[in-house]
Length: 111
Image (cartoon, rainbow, N blue to C red; front, side, top):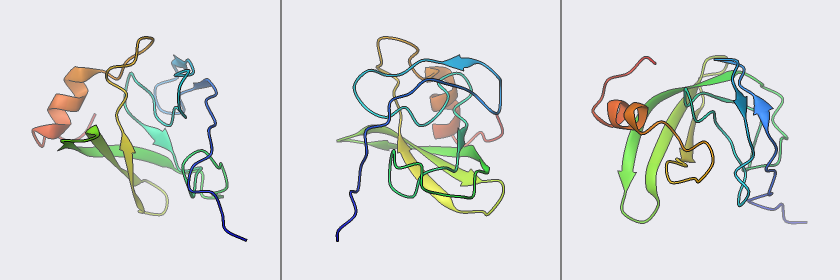
């Protein structure tokens, strides 16, 4: 049986890195904090919450993408895996901090 590559799981959460309340996006799965851009290593495929690692995902760089906008590259602080997530800088409610996205695009790491 084939597994889904994407599961809509648009729940709000409290950021494990900065402690701020993150609201749902309303149109897709919110997978990182819009304030600090950190995430949790909880998905195997987007939204499935099937990964047991649970480590903090540190934003290490941002890559501009002509079709998808900005792509945030995260590294898990527990297992080292790299994950790519689309930025939500154009969201109506709690958009990603554009200053942090630009800073990471310019190669300035460490949030």
